[in-house]
Image 1 (cartoon, helix red, strand yellow):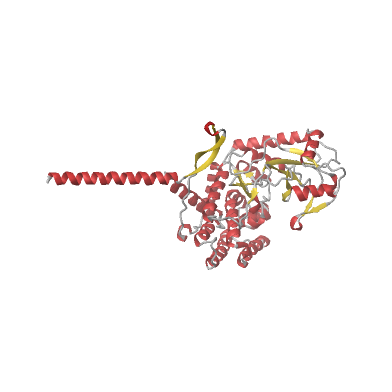
Image 2: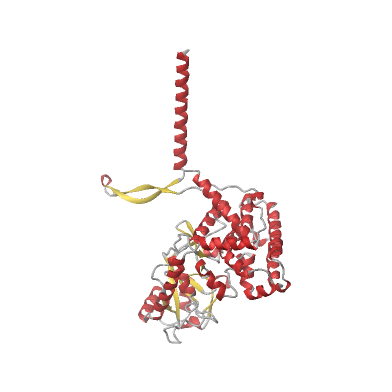
Length: 481
């Protein structure tokens, strides 16, 4: 009997040891799957007469798990003005970065003073760098700039490569000059963008090259005419920035950035839309925690840099530590790309705070502060909906945008804020109900649910859902250790 007992005990002991070894092995394999092998350097093997040997490094790349949300988990809840104010105070405390605001202000002042004191010799160097050294101004210069070097343009600036080569390490962003009530130096548009990008403590923003803010003299012919570029878009230069220069000098500010690639949204093999979307939510959260709101997210302002995604173009970016100044000094705060604004960001951009106070109960000052954060998430969700669910092509979505325009145009009707939130959200919910009936592989029901959780008209609901998504994914990642 004792012998049988001993044999059974030994058997169970061996079985337990075997199970422990299996668990350890599976844990090891699971941990190794969280790493990628990256060639990080080359060494010379003397025995093989100088043949470079690639050395592999294990780079930590934690794989995120993404929780699937049931619709009822994201059901909007009605919040009071008190809840809204509490959330605003919470974010302003969490995202405050006073040292960044101070450093950016000092940087802008330094850049402005340096710009005034630049010498013409520096400008001559830029002439050579841009390869604008034709013997006489004319079509050759325009062709050189806009056919060989042109990369893109916005409302206030355009971007050039610094050579004819396909793969360049640097590009240059150049102001289009001074226009009515706008001066890229005096109003600090270009210096601001340069300094915020340069000093931002987050890796998710494309930083300009240090000490690259320069004045550049362009051929006078460009200020006397306009140039058509691809898709018949017209580029037109305005009065030069003349601080520190004679009135006739065609001088504008510019700065350099690393070269990145456009994202080809329709040609991304094995692209997990939900996973990439949540990764970008985490990136936006990191940007916000650094003290910065972007306020201008669109397909043109996200690029692929060294196989990673980065946000670019900080012309509309703001710092949370300056919100009190915005509230007291600005009657109408303008958010960026109007196609990707949230409904309330659209209203804030087109209705003055004084008008809203006179005709409505909207409390635009409070909404504006909350949308500084919440609008970025809306813009990102709308961009993904546009690219992967054809949202912008839907007639119902166009009606949704027209309804927002009608609210702005009829501000005197004193429509209640909660009524607006409810009415617009009902329209959005119905749009996604229609989407569910469409069979599109890149726009799965789960992905739609994820987008709809962010596309909440009430910014309080939107931020609560963002917090839940970010927190749930963080907790799930911790369980992998």
